[in-house]
Image (cartoon, rainbow, N blue to C red; front, side):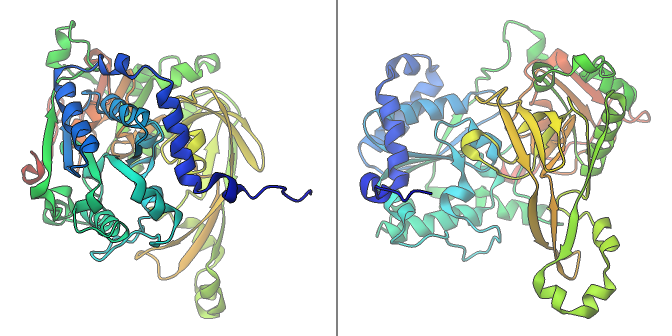
Length: 476
């Protein structure tokens, strides 16, 4: 291969700042006022408060509180567009991959701030004071962080601690204006086997700077059609069994030509537990007519444990294949051309291939899966998904193991937690197993854009009620 003739870093400088300069150039070619004029009164008040802090370098910390449908994303992008058009650097991040795709220039919080997956009280971000990231944040005027209530408070504290250090400032977040957004009526941080007190204590409401945050609230739902009086009531339509639920959400699933990208992207079924989601997905796959492709994973112990022959002899490959702990890819994946799948790992954020992206399988090969994206601006684009290796250490098994498999799962049905940040036209909710965590029911019912497109499956012995769980301690 020919040698490079130019030093890229010498020409461009800090590549991270260069990326933001491209966003600034795009913003300066846009008529920002047209977008600002689309804000309603509540959004305009919030817009003025946040931009005032940025332009006057006040370094105010905001929490933007709002339920599903109040168009927080549109407001975030409008604020970022205005600031970028004036030459300011705006970092837009979200706690989940799907939510980050909705933000212009968005990235996940963990990748942007180098937050460790091991959440500790003394956690700091994983970049040095002399790094490209530190140089970027010293130039940053605004940070917008969406879906923060689902993040552990120690992650937010780590970002605060790190920004103070790299900016040589004792002001919160190093004096940068920060907008933390989300809804405490949605999913809270996941604490393994945690009880109510542990989950509440891990929430943003117990963030050390919570008392210093300026809370801004939006409450006008922009997503529902307010001309339809039924939407204000949000009625429920009940079904009798799983077969009828599948038929209501995915009509004519047994006809191959029915499964198109537009058909799949408009509908989903939600359930509280992974086992129930797997059962629904398998039932749907059996109904869908086409050849089945089966992919088995390759399992092995981590190198350190392979040296200990006593462990190797005690846990043969057959045992490793049978394991399915949380966080590990499934050993057996069965797919059909035309079925929906969901990515379980971040592959390429710029191409909107991240944890939570839904796709439709278009070809199944031995070493690659070809699929079309069903979400976001890249809707319809082809993607090629390779096998990936993941090493997991879990309290459930006394050793570390590596599994190589395609990072996908069927997506006729999703867990309620995984659906946060996604909205579709037709939603089925499986409540045969009641919700078990804070506001899961609210999240499930608010994924739909119209009340008369919701189908709910309830137990036959309790056909008109279900359990709801709310932790009042975290609500605003």
